[in-house]
Image (tube, rainbow, N blue to C red):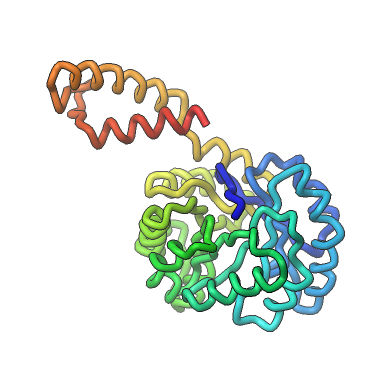
Length: 281
């Protein structure tokens, strides 16, 4: 199956808006989504699939394109796979994944339609999906995932807040499952696309717990995500200096050092190596 590579930003566009789709390559996102699910009204699913067939093949030569199909349990899923996915896409995005059986259904449907080379970006956005995230994100068909706070809180009967305290456990649990499954993970949307401050703050929170990128619902969010999920110049400089001192010390038989007032041993050196490696991608 195809792998997606770096995923700092994943930008959505409604499948019913050819004008939005045409502009996707110029937005600078690491990957884009032509959305046949939430952004497509129930009465326009056939039109959405038609636009995928007509517009996406050429688009894939210009940027990394995925298609979001409707949930496995929905009345539209089977037809989405049959006539709303083209072989050229980098992956399909499947929302509300909450069981291995659902992923097996997706995998079998792809194989049956000659699309077996296509992987899945799994949406973990229900109570059951969060609870069972580890086996879901270890499934052979899953090549990336995203955490969806809005649907989760709707499922839980909770209330969304700017603090994100109500999704801290779930957000962290999904990050842990993604790490164990070895797949890149994208953070929740910020629905107020004018609130850059909140978007940047959420990116920092997400990066701190292991997310590799963020879902974007507006082009203006893309450069913010792209900048937030790479180390800053200051981080890289400090990491390199730390490693220089640490590696010199370990060559002399020391296992821990004092670096600029901080005790540094192997776990912190691992973090520093990751910062340097990420900056060089």
